[in-house]
Length: 407
Length: 121
Image 1 (cartoon, rainbow over the protein chains, first blue to last red):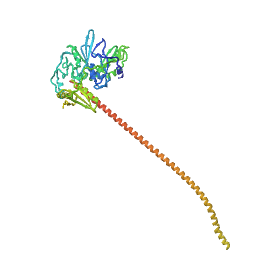
Image 2 (image 1 turned 180 degrees about the horizontal axis):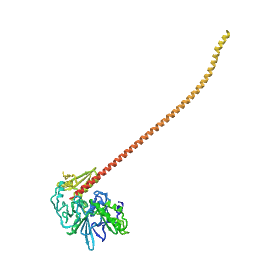
Image 3 (image 1 turned 60 degrees about the vertical axis):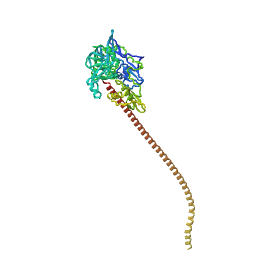
Image 4 (image 1 turned 30 degrees about the horizontal axis):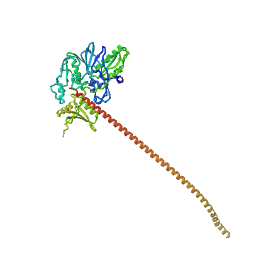
């Protein structure tokens, strides 16, 4: 583990911005992008950093093991895994790697190839995203969500009755744009829950951040081929060095993928006539940090050290970070939690703030406890609806607080 | 007859004279002896008193030493007891901190699981 971390610990120079989505693909190369580091500020959460840099919550968590997702320490340095090994597939149309929870869109740009990549949310183990070849059959702006019977049943069991169809708007989980796939019932769409990108949270569809699905939608014609694969272990080369990128497998198929990886590496070792550092391979595979790590010199004399991550400046405002409106005396609120631990209260407030649609929440510091207050809400109905969502989605028993009355 | 009387007189007077002479000399000797014995007795008494005083002093010292030793042992025992109690308290504090940490971790995991569930459609 040490060697993997050592290669990544010291940043190079500092930059204002870093490319997040669009990368040229050099002929014969498989690794794109570069790693970066950012220093956290007070009030940051990993999902906010992830969204700003077009990363999934899975990627940022895996790259920064041990960092509190919701209440990280201000000043802590976070690795932004903005370097990727392209999946082992033909480079055309749209390619989705479920294990990496990333979508790659290939385009010819003159004589060169360009890839645009976005993080995604994928299906759960009960309702997994299907793999294989398919294509985009139609596209829709502001799609209506026709609620599948299975999902309606799940919600009914939780006491939430869904309508047969949800019109466009903040309650629609498809978001503003949808690309319908030839595999019936499966879509690539936006979301009203941006914090779910990088999670196994869908019913088999592929979700993108609202800002990313718009770009993909505009850039993808109908009939574009879509190939969905599940490759937890990726190997690829850049500048004569072989890199390995390991992700935590989504299911038991990881064992087979690992066997295939070892077979490939053994063949490469035999071809090169030099011994591979198998200990390093095992370390990278076990750590599963989702970042390309150099493991072998394909051309002797190539620079084996990983490129130093670039340090990026913290932006003034993180894109998409939920904002909490100012307190209003005459508004309604919901007491969501009353706990003795500050971190716990901050975590609960952050999770509530990242619901989709957002429920604003903040922490009130009392003398010996901390209260999580959701709101402000315009009326009792809104407050009760928020309390109902807290109960159904987060199993929180909220107490509705009436407005302060004028004497 | 006279001869008999003389003999009888001699038999009575001579011993009396002889006895009178022995008593005076002896008395002086006895007195001298008594003085010496008194002096010896005084010396012996003094010696005895000194020995007793020394013995008493030794006993006092021994008692004091013993008392100090006991007190030192008691203090050491108390220190040991206090150390054991401190160690026990520290262990308890560590256990409580561990438990608190475990509970915090559990709460964080529970919150995370609830969050992930809430992100489904």
